[in-house]
Length: 258
Length: 333
Image 1 (cartoon, each protein chain N blue to C red):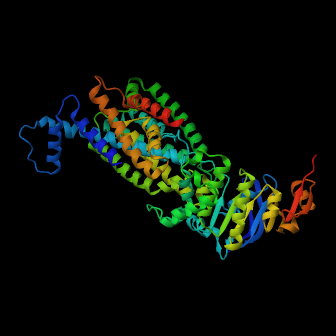
Image 2 (tube, chains in turn purple, orange):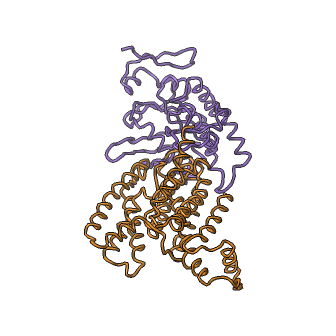
Image 3 (tube, each protein chain N blue to C red):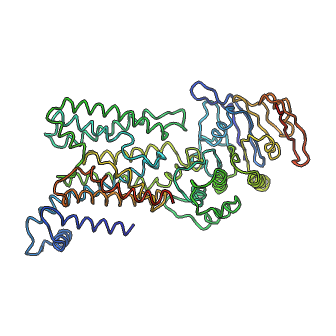
């Protein structure tokens, strides 16, 4: 599976958010998007998931165009863990996770045994099985994020988009989720595109990095090649030191103290 | 569900027997049975007046009241779901203000001579308001803000405020009709006909079917716009369909019986404590509970109290304390 952007541009009124981006993402890889606030990271994911329509250009999914597919068809191909994990109504955790199966359950039908099993196993994997009867609006931010994560995994899609999906999780759960995602990339040939703020996690876990600034691609390629003092300076305007770290088996970024 | 339906039927029968002329329950059942089995072998001792009271006066009023309560509660559940806001009610988009404005004009111009024109004007006013509010809060460019909860509520409040000022002006220039306007606004089920009942019933059946069809999408919408879209919900389509459905239900109710607050706001809210937030259960149960509550209130004002007081006042007076009790018990558990 291959997602391709051809000359994509997007603007809210006058403000250009994405300016003329062309690139492609291929199955079996973990991509990370990094960049400063307001650089268009989330907008890029929204365009890829079909939530936003590009002002110019088109997005291809293999041979088809994203916009030619119905929302329902897209939901079986692309899952999104978005930042809207605040849910106002007191749904139980297992109901929320079950919603990930909805693209597969016909209207007015009850979930099948297979759906139930899938939901149970995903809740176990994400460590929220013991919370399954709790109400979602009574959980902490990190727990809710794991519920949303489990829901997206239940969608069982070849493409997974993560929009700062780990921002409220503790490091233990973050690493568990990353291991899980990384394994599915290698074993199930999934395509994962994740927005990160933590450059060290991005470097350690992703195959390729995409650096975005003011809606333009500054660098895109193998994460160990691209992560340099020059690119960090250019994208974030920060003087950092970058060294290979044995423990992480990847380049790590060290920031100045002043 | 079955239990609720049973209680509703029971209430309808009890309500039929109560009133200025008391009709024994056994006679009511015999008369109804006789009517529906269309064998006109009514018992000898049946009063002619009983027949007239039941079929021309009480039954139309009772059934209209029940369907209006049902429709308002369904509309309330829809609005709370779409607007992600438990404070939303069927009138959030200014439908009641639009209907009231339309009705006031009809009363002021004395169009009520034709008798149908007040409800027709009210309905037209409600529809016009709905489309104005949707136009104000719609944006083709920005799907995350277009028809968003905040935009809809704000537009609804603004339009309703303008219309209220308009209604005040109409009252000011209305002279002797001002009391007619005020009484219409307070709502009443007095002298409702079979036509009123059928009009609301048709809307209720259609509305219920549409809401149940999209009930699951409504659940997903509560996850947020992006999540709902990524789970296969065509957000724009579903939002517009459900907003129109909810507002049409509210519009027909207001046109038939005036502005009755409270039912649409608090019935879905209270029922949610029982069923949980799943709209597939919430909507049908709210419908039954709404019918029950409004009929209960109307029966009290019609048959128990020495004087009829406006139904809207009574729904709040009877339902309010019950809600307070449930709220306090469940909210802080």
